[in-house]
Length: 527
Image (cartoon, rainbow, N blue to C red; front, side, top):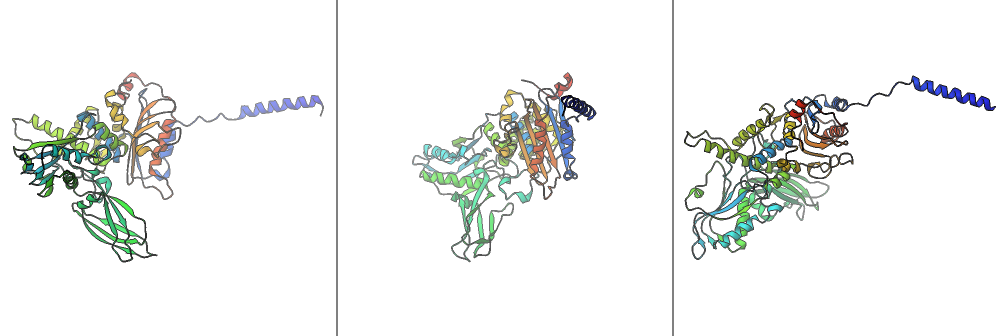
């Protein structure tokens, strides 16, 4: 090809390319955070569901996105945020809870106690956990040090500090046998859970083997074992039933011969009674015999022995600080811990009401839980959360009668975002991809360690509320609530639907500062 022709051809191609470029339409702008979130919510699987969403910048005060932020929805365990905040505000992060050993008489010189021993609980939910494992030994050592060698009366396990039912308002009867809906009592032990192990017998037709761990836990139940060992090819089919309010546990069905031992976690029917068993065993190990009966009492019964003038304190043991209790309550979504924290506030509130009414007609009776919920309403009001924005029946989030808006959650989070005195609240939250109920969520490098939030889940319901730091370094507070969602057969985990929205928020570009009035109303104090 002649050189001049090649040059002309190159010029033609250059002009053609320039013309083509000029004729191409400009690239579409990237979708905004709001558009991406709304596109996610608009998918057909959410057609019958309800969402409540709000996310704000803690640095600028801007609302990053909101979707029905004032719609009242069931929050599930995310409601624990309200309980934790109230407990910290009322009791303080360093508050510790006592469990005391009392006696109705002093021992004689030869060590005989001609009266009762009373194990009195003030609401510590940690007895028997690794953080408070030696509680019974501590109290038994105190009894030995006090010179007690023999108790000629009863050992009374007293849980009357909480004048309330052992289940929260709105808890469902079907949940009460389960490990996650254990009784909330002033005298709890082993987190009020019993582990039951089931194994086949030696031969087909033999009764299945049942064992409790530790063995003393078996004394908490009347066991009716109707479960039988079956030969192959029959498979195991195990059923365990305990009706609410009863101690009888019925085991029926079948266990396959040579099947591996399986274990179940069940709710204890009478935690104070088990606490008494454990203390009596610890006393016996120190040579202190109890000749009377072991019995437990709880509201509405009253311990007449403790009302006597001769009661004296033998010893006491103390819980970890409230900040540590709250951390387990938030990170592991521990229902017992959070319901007990609510009831502890109720005890304090009842005392305040009685002191205010001194010299006046006695106020009408309210349960400890009712007192606590009155304190909750007053506390939330101080944060600008109106009664119709957050209505709670209990402290754990198990009740479907609990209602809150996403906007109310964000008000709470903003109030706790930068106050050094509220560090215990923030540090108790699960961390994405690291620990607690977020250990297995948001684990990818762009999200891991950027989200600190409380989870919530029950059937057809999921929620997540807390703090996050975007990829640009902006701090945000957010609340996501999903109700009435029926996961399609081909759908993934419901929690993944919320996590997708969090990822969109993490990608948000840095927002511009809001006007001064809006920033003051939304962002709260800044560091």
